[in-house]
Length: 445
Image (cartoon, one colour):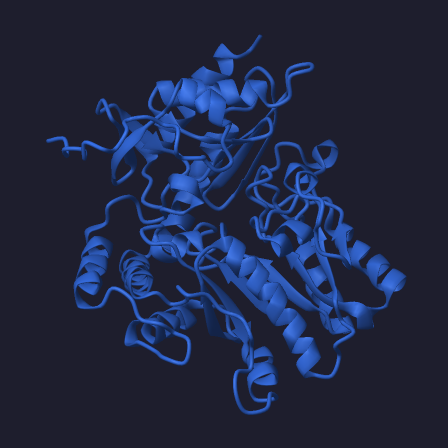
């Protein structure tokens, strides 16, 4: 490939970019650069092929460089690069919302666009508070999350989230927040294939929070159907159904964070569909545009929309939004992505691949220091025994070995997380297992 000439005044160094969620000093001492991508692969700046075992960052579900998405973005950029959606509109945003509503779980048919999963989480929490206030229950201000939950990096998402490093660095979090216990129980469920049998009763902790504070003070409960960023925690049998029943009984809104589990990852359009539980609000991002343009969304039920919009006096009903809500390029990317998902039946493709994926992942059982393996849909978490006094070291070194040998994985703590594009084939799965297995063996000591 011909190199693009760099402006003379542009320094060729790594100093200016403060990288997110990165050990900046370590990276800049030994950078790992990706230069281009196509299909199932990234390519480094020296043209080395790297199999994408993580769909970028849980988001490139249809594979990289899809022509249909690229052309839709190009055409829209040439037609209209930006249009405001404050007191104005443009057709692409309405078309994208309508197209998304077609595949949402029954009853979730109102779409509020954001730009990321973090914004979606905070938006959903604000909608929940606005809903109760609109119904004359403004005292419902308490929010409930879950230990080890991840809902982005906004102050609302961090507050209801339960990943301790995210919370400890920023002291001023939202008040009136409680947390359910997490569902990670390897002493009962180690090496479970799919949904664990033990742990459904953990949802009953919500009744304890209700008893402590009163149901009439609780606005919403937010959970991930499958907790991804914390290391692939699969919900136990009956767990989400019990949460749904408790919320319904006490008038509490149930919010599913489907930023990772949406758009085919679970072998269905959404985790809610696969797991048979419909929430009141649902957050989305990542796979919505195949990550080609940043975009997120919150889906709400008609009842929530009507309570806020129809119950308000004339004028603005919800004082919330973003400059880029329903951005024309993002809307075009979303429409093209949703068309691809339907034309190629990517959820069905993921579902068909799931048994082979599950068997391949669990074939790593018995390797040195592998203490648990978890899977759901085309997601897997391989948990490693931490090195004494060096938490995360083993997994980080496995990650580095994998990358050096042509495979991109993701680590969180001492857990290796995998979530390939949904176009993955058996040969790719075999390569993932072989490369990861070699890296785990190499870090046996």
